[in-house]
Length: 358
Image 1 (cartoon, one colour):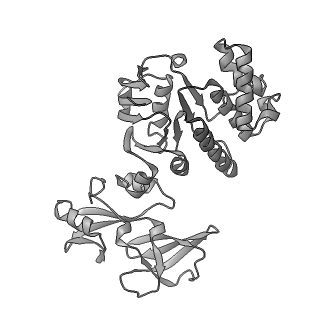
Image 2 (tube, one colour):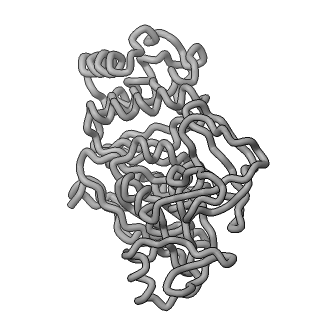
Image 3 (cartoon, one colour):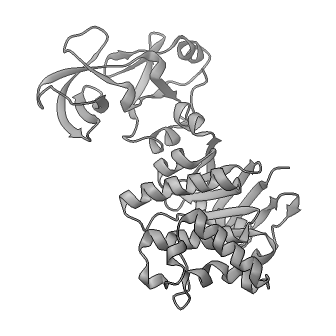
């Protein structure tokens, strides 16, 4: 049994089913990301792991204990919230040890915990300040320190960086990753940000409408998305996708034959699907000279420089496609260009939105 086992968990409010049979298992020390759009059920699932809500059916195990109906205080967990949830009338040191004090931990041990986590999070100079005297990033560190002081079996993070500005989000994301590498505590982290998911997680559960759409490593999720939804949700800019029909042993759209790998062509022979979604990630698309062989003609519609790379939006017979180009785009907006990509970069999905087996 893993450090956390979620078995066929369902949650219903009245006639509305919020979670529709969740099965997840992670090992000790793993960092699990629950990611998905708003309303997919990820925070509901986290609340059940935390003991703040109870499943309608199914079970949750932490280690070898069934904690499905156990109160939060008996689960040996620590949670970090989006809102920080600090006591405004207490200073930083008091906030850090409040949970230990409630558990009657002796003062010498509490003092050691404050010293340990304040050094780890570099907040020793803030111990006498109240939360109102801290920046957003400092308050989030204090909230993390309160969790770390517990030394729990399981850390739970509920969108902890959502209230921070872009630069601070990057810094705190790195801080959380370093802390996990140092403590090796099993962690469950909820986010709607796919960049956080890809950079932090050992494994990712992409959720959609109360179900786990795909569960795997970041490389699995990004490189071999199991469904069209995962393919479009993970990755920025989003994957270029065009609707196609089978034609002459391959696929075509608007009269344009599109390249496939040998494995994809072989898979199509064993499939009854006629309508297929054909996808290529923007970083796998390159700009080529107009008229070049095996390219898709188009017109450069817009460019978005980001510094080290440029997003080039190209109007083509298959719709507007995006190419993620290193450096600058030298072609002028409104001029003809062509798009090229390798067949190995193609993702193919059937009418059921599932990945075509290769």
